[in-house]
Image: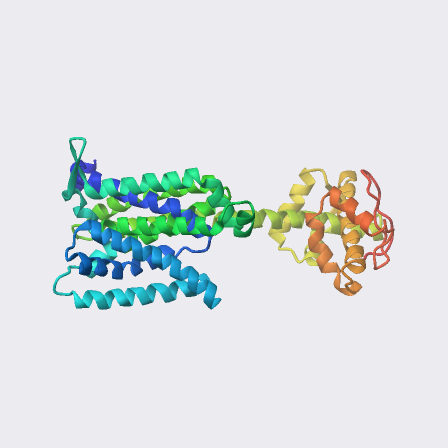
Length: 450
């Protein structure tokens, strides 16, 4: 099947592997950049290493990989140091200091490149998308097998980054969430910060030549951000980000082979398509993630509104029976008083009837014994909150009803006990309405509604 789209393992297999190594290496560190709200530092370093490349050329007189790598890493580390220094001295936020540093270094690098324009070969395509498609052609011998040089380099970077995250996981977690606590506990937050920044610089530089700026920046941010939508556990987040990074690399290269052919073109840039695949994967996760996905939030909100309408119906019927034991409320009256849509109210009434909380009598509804018990709990909670808001929050009585209305839906029996104790077990609310007792079965009093 893969061969039908022009796939050859000798070429495409190495390209995908190089993309996976770059993506996973970047995502491992990117989790902590996202936690520290420094997501764009990878982008800053990727731009700021330009003067390092030019300086390495001026000093060495060649374009060999080692001097370029060392020069770029040094400038990448300096980028992190200058960013932190400007943030501390200038009292500006991280984003502003980052912008000052990387734009200044990038401009300096451009000037240096212009001075060496006749001798150095650095085109925009190399900077933006790298040359991952050509990486299988540049090989080194490893154990008698010729392996692409970029795979060896990124494999080493992945091992180092993985060891860093695994061995210093606790230290990284504490220093990311609470630097002050970290330092007080004997884990120097500054040391962890600069270790992380150093590895970010090394990863960005190692990936720069082969995959370019676009992919490495995307992988520092997008897979960790997608993983954060799925879980609040850091260990699981790191694992998921590696999975998302791997999928982005695989589907990105497949997309580079398949999608252009659909529009009559031969292929497109693999690194760019890997970044696009990561973005599409993020959109899918943002929609369907079980923890913070858009659909999950919509479902939770709908269920919450359903629960609140259920409780509002029960509390309303209880208050009506307080006024008149024989009161029966029809559907139109309930909809008018609660300002509920007729279809939603009908579903709620049917649900409450099936659960045995109310019964239908003619065109109206009455609470059952269990419904009165639940209604008493809700009304008791509401009136205890009204007392609390008047006594403790010092709010005027005419402004407390709506606030108590919201709070009553999120109060359990234990909190009702605390409210009762704090407000000295009142018998009436600030409007003079009786507070139902905490009981498993009681009938409502025939008193005025609050």
